[in-house]
Length: 339
Image (cartoon, rainbow, N blue to C red; front, side):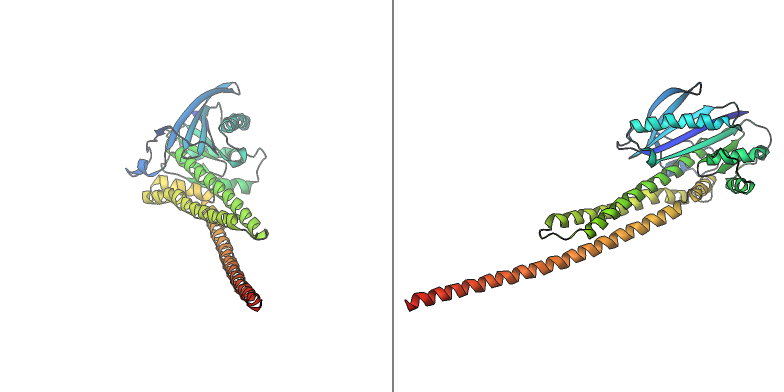
């Protein structure tokens, strides 16, 4: 029997991810076009480090343009022990350091642990005797969970063959497969985490735009507001760009997954996306985008009305100057005539 721990750390970085494309073969039931349907990683770098007395390889991969993935896979003597918590913690510390080297920030990262069991005999349900520890590992909680919470955690699962099983949660997944064919499942779980991270990044950007819009509303309109008008126009263009990016980046994967239909990869991804509440994130982002568009539309209308009023005032003043000029000429002519 073999026990392995795979850790995934994804973070936003400032540099564009470049490298050779890494493609995972579709090992489970999937249509022939599966490999061309999902986004692929690019191989960036690889390094090793000693962690907990073991030499562990840290694979650096990317999802262009700005998502860095630090992935490790480690053999463990027994995955059903509390020692796994300590190993997991040390590995994540190294991954965070690598991500920081590339300009990533810990608060804009996603971490995910995949606990892999293979080479066993019989059905995977035999390992559910470790259900309390499995649930704790999936939630990254060292405390003993309530039986109801354990049952709720293990309820999110999917089977394809008689001798395999996948248990999914927010922080991790337990994968059981006699033959150890985990690569496709791990790639799909990674993609779900990429989507979650991109939603969080977009949510942050929209919050920043909302705060800027609020600051524009709070500030009094200066007499010379040409540059401020340009700022608002640029922000409006930025909002439209964000909407286009949201539609392009967030919808492509879901569209392609839907094309795969009811095959195992699509059902697995949808289960992970449901656990990560991707639909709720998308609805929240859509609402914020619409709010921003409404706010900037109102600001632009107010600026247009203000600009129109100022133009009318300038025209009126100019007319008064013209009238005053004519009156001055008349007065001067009259004085000259009387002399």
